[in-house]
Image (cartoon, rainbow, N blue to C red; front, side, top):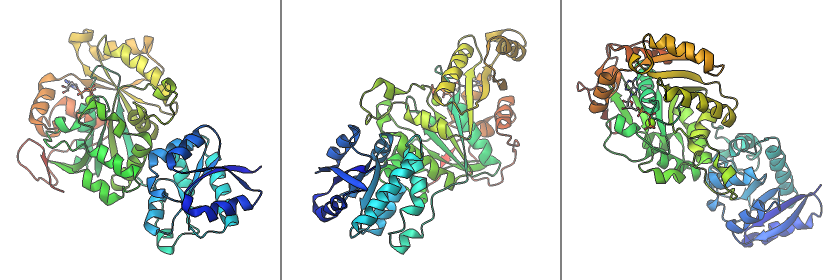
Length: 435
Ligand SMILES: Nc1ncnc2c1ncn2[C@@H]1O[C@H](COP(=O)(O)OP(=O)(O)OP(=O)(O)O)[C@@H](O)[C@H]1O
Ligand SMILES: [Mg+2]
C-alpha cells in the first residue's frame, strides 16, 4: 500500500515532484506552505509520513513527539551536518537535499516502519531506533556521533497531595548518595510546587530544569550544556548537581514530556544516579482535552515515573496521609502500570497513630492497604527537619547522628558517612559552587 505523505517547503518542488513521479511507494497527499499547516494535516489523520524539505529548524522535540503520537514519521532534508545532528537528537531522520526520489521513498518507508514498530509511537523510541538508519546519507563526521545512552539510574520520589515529604526525602537521598561517592543529579520536576532550591538554600532560582527542557526541545542539550544549567552544590561530605524547578506554578508548560525525556536521558550520561522530585498529581490530562498538541499539566511527573528505575512512594503516617497514599498507589498503578513502587511512610509518630506507631501502621496496612508492603518507616523529627530547613541544608550536615538521617540513607543503602572525603566548606549551610 502506498504511504500517504505530506510535505512542507516550496523551495524543493523538485524533490516533491520526484516523489509524485514515482507513482507507487508513496503518495503526496498534501503540499503545505508551513509547519503549522503540516501539523494540522497530520493531526487530521491524512498522512503517515511528513517530509520537511525546507525549514527543518522549526522542528522541536515537542512537535516531533506530537507527530509521533498521531503516527506520523518525519524525514527532514538538510545538507548541514550540525543541523542533521540536532535533528537526530530530537528523533528526526534526515537526508541530503539532493537525495534521489527513490532513495527518499525508501527512507520514508523505513521511518514509517520504525514508528509502527514502536507501539506507543513515542518520540524517544523513534529517536533511538533512528540512530543507525538515519545516518546513511549523512556526512561522515555526523555519522561518527555515538547514540545517546547513559548508564545512570533514575530514582523518582513521588507521593500524594498533602506534603508527605517528597522533596525532603529526595534532597536527602541525593546528599547521601553523593556522600557515598556517587555522581548525583537532583532534579526538581514538581510542576505544582517546586522547592528544591529553597530546601537547599539556593538564592539563585534559575529554573535549571526549564532551561534544560528548552535546550532539549531545540535539540541542543548535550552533556556540556546540561552541566552548565545544573550547578554543583557542595556539602561537607560530597558534591551533587541540581536542576532547580520552575519558579512559578504557571510555568508548567515549560516542562513538556518529550523535552523532559531527553533531559533525563542526557542526565543518565552525566550522573550515576538521577534523583527526581516529582509532583503529586497523576491525572492524564490529555483525556480532558481534544487538542492533542496541548501540553500536559502532569507530563513532568508522569514522564519521570515512566522512566524511573526506582520509584519511592512517600506517604504521611497519619489518618489523613495513609488513606491518601493507598488511593494514590491505585492511581499510580493505573497511570504507570509497570512501576512497582517502594512504599515509604514518613513522619511516623505515636501522637498521630497511637503507641508503637510502626506496628500499628504495619497492622493497618496489612488489613486495609494494597498488596505492596511498606518498605520503610521514617520517624517524625520536627526539630531536626526544621533545623535543616532553617539552615538550607541536609541532615548529613545538620543532624548527622539522627535516626531520621540514618533511615533515609538506608532507603538507598548508602552507608552513613561521618567524616568528609572532600570537605569544602566548614559552614553548615550548603553553598553553591560556581561551575
Ligand atoms: N520525617 C519528618 N519529620 C519531620 N518533618 C518532616 C519530615 N519529613 C518532612 N518533614 C517536613 O515536612 C514538610 C513538608 O516536606 P516536603 O516539602 O518535603 O513535602 P512535599 O511532599 O515535597 O510537599 P509539597 O507538596 O510542598 O511538594 C517540610 O517542612 C519538611 O521539613
Ligand atoms: Mg515538594
